[in-house]
Length: 328
Ligand code: NAD
Ligand code: LMR
Image (cartoon, rainbow, N blue to C red; front, side, top):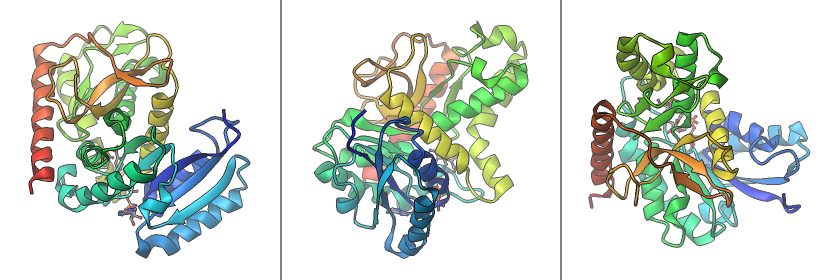
């Protein structure tokens, strides 16, 4: 714990995810009940008036740990000295779109934000990209941040992990807390690979509890891959509170040493990974955070041909997105 407030940046502060995320951050959920924080919130100029309203509400909560709120539209000012940056600000997809369709419009946001973080953020800032397509947006930010470690850029696949746990819990009638680990491999897209082969229910392999292999190989995987689209169809808007919750889960996992025997899913730089995935991608792997607070890819997860094939398809999609993003 430090007595000085720790600076947390959130972008897209007037949007729907931020409307849940900011209040949970301010209540101390990410850094714990003893750590004062300062929120640095970025928006586009046209949304600053709405963000002012969000700030008023944050003020009106009288959160004991929230020492300062800085709002603005200049990333070089907002990212000054931030230790954590949660990059949410980007357009969401509408019905019938894939997340990759957002790359043209959203990708450019992460060029400028990567550059600004590289210049003014804390040298050890951890950056979590939520705005879609989050894996490739994180790659863009990382590639534009020459003064920061490539190991500190992440994209969020925890919502997929949580969704997969919820699906397995409902099917098996066990509580969701008994479903662990649950690995998501690859892209936060419809090619992601929810790995039921290495998942456990109350310590037992999923396949020894749920005997319906057809449901696992087909319905389960598809439900998780398409859950975001199903929520857009039902709500008319993309997931927000569950995305904010997963962002907090992710940050806590990235910061705190992972308890023995546990792991979590997050997309991070694939350089030097032990699973034969091409380098220079932001790919979701099973991870643990070590005693020094450094997230690392868990080695030695067994892979069968079914998984390998699907993991390669997700890798191919990320390579395609990278080509689109970096073509001059
Ligand atoms: P929203 O439209 O409600 O809010 C986005 C906000 O970002 C808007 O207020 C907009 O003004 C702001 N913004 C746009 N460009 C910006 C920039 N350059 N700098 C700062 N702010 C900027 O959208 P939302 O529902 O909050 O979703 C935000 C993003 O998160 C979308 O891309 C969505 O697809 C994605 N998302 C990802 C996950 C995930 O699991 N990775 C889950 C849910 C949503
Ligand atoms: C989600 O998974 O809910 C988000 O990525 C939003 C979307 O476009 O599906």
